[in-house]
Image 1: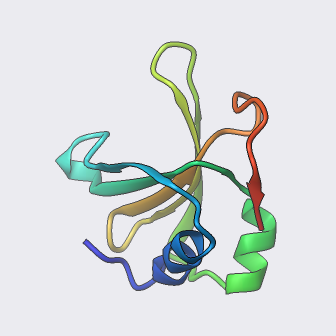
Image 2: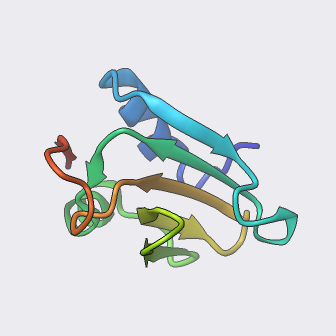
Length: 96
């Protein structure tokens, strides 16, 4: 699935050589598809630089048992682009 609201971000991540670590309906079909990347997404910088649509919200989960994620979710397309959570990521590259 491709979300026009997050396509530019995903294209830039892939063009920069950031590895995609997982893709699918991780949280169930009712919330759509998520693409996960091997980096920390600097949300504020990306939101400003890419002028993300209002339907794209900040999303994060800091889990203790099921992993962590930090990125964006499009309410309209039910599509997420996620990286590692900055509080649980260790030494990861930051994508701005």
